[in-house]
Image (cartoon, rainbow, N blue to C red; front, side, top):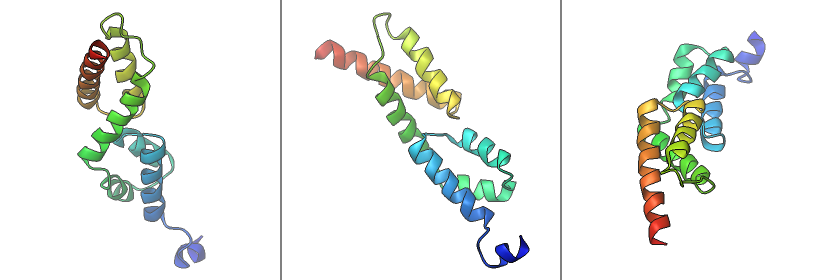
Amino acid sequence: MDRLAAAGLINDADFATQWVRSRHTYSGKGKRALAAELRTKGVSAENAAAALAQIDADSERSRAEELVAKKLRTENLDDGGVRAARRLVAMLARRGYGQSLAYDVVKIALASEAERRNVG
């Protein structure tokens, strides 16, 4: 293992950076979920923190908005969006997004979608 690490073939910091970038971009994971995944992979707290620093609040919010917009296309809003709101917030929570961010993103998306459906 020491020889592999010395040759640069084992690098926890690079692994953590690539893992975070990939899982955030393609799986839509939030910082909390990514931090938990890195812990289970045995990545040190320092390497995990450095890797998670590449996700700023704007990119996390943007990704949450994309996830909600995609899921919202198939949601039924006949009940005023109450069930849809619960499902969407739960989906974001499972992916590791904070509660306040999830509620805010869902509230704005539902209002926008309701307006779009009423106008169109």
